[in-house]
Length: 175
Image (cartoon, rainbow, N blue to C red):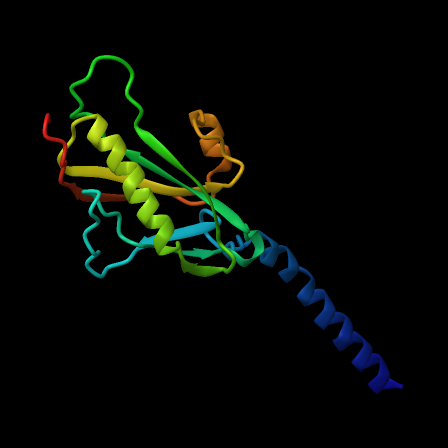
């Protein structure tokens, strides 16, 4: 009988001692499984093959949060227009059409990047830019409009902005 009472008291003491530890564990912040935006971008480090259009954006690789995968995304390219010597409004961004992003890790297709190079080249030619051009690129949901407002772009952006500087050789003879 004595042993049963001692065992019951030891068990009660043990449970009482563990009760306060639950409160301490709840106060510790939990790190998110995937920090930041749903998609992380990086540029290919190998030297990019020069594009005949005059500008080459390096290949873009992505990795995605497995819990926030998109099946299609749109590439948005913003470029520095501070060197433009035109009167009137100047657009500083290009929104590509949607592209499939079927896996959690991969790269944007070479054909898509080639189309991005050609589209960006036409913007830069029209503004008579040449030399080093500062760009930032990001991925957005495929439902992004062709000329989004900053608010729409921020709401539909699924990656952080990635900056890069590229060389543009303007073939336009009048610039």
